[in-house]
Image 1 (cartoon, rainbow, N blue to C red):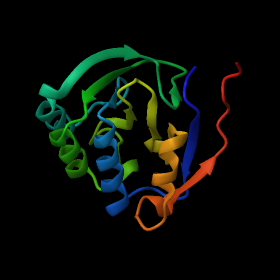
Image 2: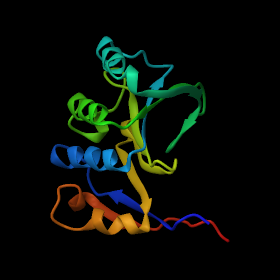
Image 3: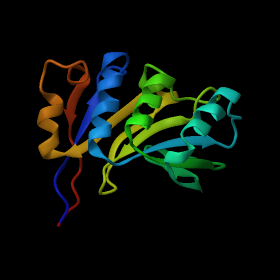
Image 4: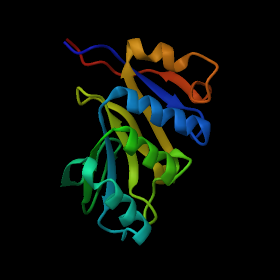
Length: 164
C-alpha cells in the first residue's frame, strides 16, 4: 500500500528565493530531475551547452509523447532524466531564476522532479505557467510551514487517492 500523498498547488510562480528553495528541497529528495526536449522546437545553442554541461548526470533518455502533466496530441519529445546532485542543483538555479523559465528554445522544457522511490514530486508545464507538487502527507507540513519564500506560494489541494 502506498503512502498517502498530498497535492500542493502554487498561488504564484516560484521565482528568485522561492525557486532556489524549491531546487534545494528537490536535492534533499535524492531522486531524479526530468527535462524535456520537444521535437517540434529546435533547442538553442545555449540550451545544448546547458545539457552538455550536465551530461555526466544523465541517468537515461527516452522518446515519449507524454510526461508528468503533459500528453502530446501529435509528435514526441526526448525525456532526459538526471540524478539530482549538488552540481545539477546549482546548474538548474544558474540556468534561470524562475520555474516557468524552462521553455524552448533557450532551455529544455517542463522541469519535473521525482523521489528516490520514483514518485512524482514536482510537475511543471512551463509554457502554460502551471505547476504543482505531489508529496507524501508527512512532507507537506514542513513545506507549508510559513516563513519561507516557497511556503508562501503553496496551498494544499485535494488529490484523489487510489481506492483500496
